[in-house]
View 1 (cartoon, rainbow, N blue to C red):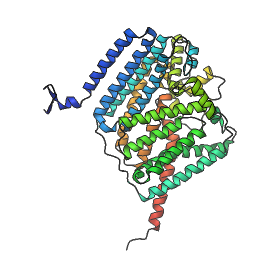
View 2: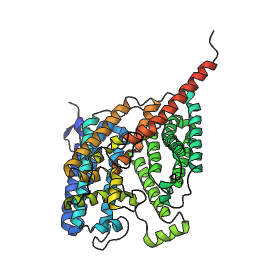
View 3: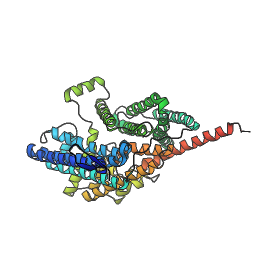
View 4: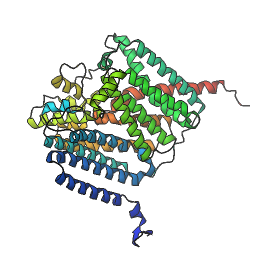
Length: 487
């Protein structure tokens, strides 16, 4: 057995040194010590919040340590790693708010809405433990199904002559779709107008806009997947395209950030596989940049994108994390509180299968949507549902913590299967586009439901892939037809 000798002369098997157990032991010891200090030195109401935060960090560190021992440098190529990083952010940022605020007299970000429920520190801490349960379940499900594999070689996608022409044609289609979306849109003055900008259109025009929105959104990811293999020669152009798409989506949606986030995550995924692996340091810088962008966009959105008013708001209230990070916590806390009191509104069985019913065309997709169900009973005057319901919130509607554990295991298993499927096909442009899309939109699973990505995959990306495939085949056929025959 191969061994190594440490500075004290002890013989340590190399396989032990490479294993995650030393890191896990150190993390566990640190967490235990932190928990002890939190329980003895902090006020009781603060300790109720800090303990699940420590548990969250411990579970995530254990997950990262085990996954890194299996995949090495491919950590940022794993959709499960990105998903759990986001889940930790949606857990820790609300907790930080509770820790920094006076829980009896708090106001400001997240708290103004949450305080209407008159939460106690014990209830807030108890719900953070549900977040811990969810993160642990996803980690276990992912690691069980993911299996072992070393870091894959950098993707060397086959660059055919038809790709450059396809990129130009896709860019042209996206620009045309942008034009028609802008031309047929009603005036948008405030953020909420974005959700009703096409309601004035007739049936035919509405169908046409749906097609434009589908090809525009799906086209982004196909365009990027085809472009990143040309990074060495066109990196500045690719960076300009990514930045341009982010600016366009932020301005077009009047400050909606989720589309911009998905574009940035797709770029990170494609850079990781086509250029060089993203290190933890690079990833941390990118995460902090995205956090700063989210916060800045929210500040400007709240004051109608008025720069002087934004300056005044920051001067008076200071910088606060984007309220987006409280979206998962608030609705799930509310519904678990309703569940505990036995006052959940009536719910139809169809709500449980909404993700699959949404795949059926020509039916009312709002009737059995949990978001609309929530809005009908709790925000009846809202123009559109103002809150999202993620897996944690949906578990409150049905089976509680047992339901949540099952959902989290399924969630992790699905993402692990996705990675295994992709790594076998990663040199194909269409597989890279599918994976980049699901990688980038994994945050939607956290905010909506475990099977949420089925609907946009089928209704947005697949039609766009079909159009791109037909164009590619037409270009290839035309070139073969025009090439002079040999001999």
